Image: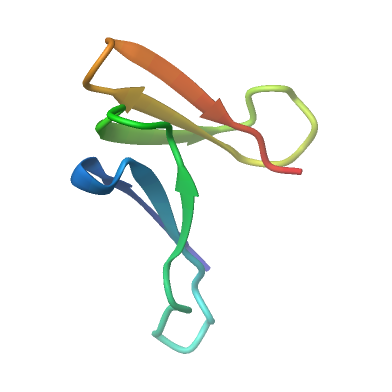
Length: 71
């Protein structure tokens, strides 16, 4: 099952929608990216090689990249 990750630019957070397996998704769970970060794009990869997919966020303001580690 494929889940969805979205960059919520104006809300300064990243949303994750988990696939339920029957064609629907649970309600969006959000994770803050910091005040005025304005996340513009996201990617997913196992950054710390622990076997879990992490979220990489490109933030428009400040020209920064954030990593949300899956624990």
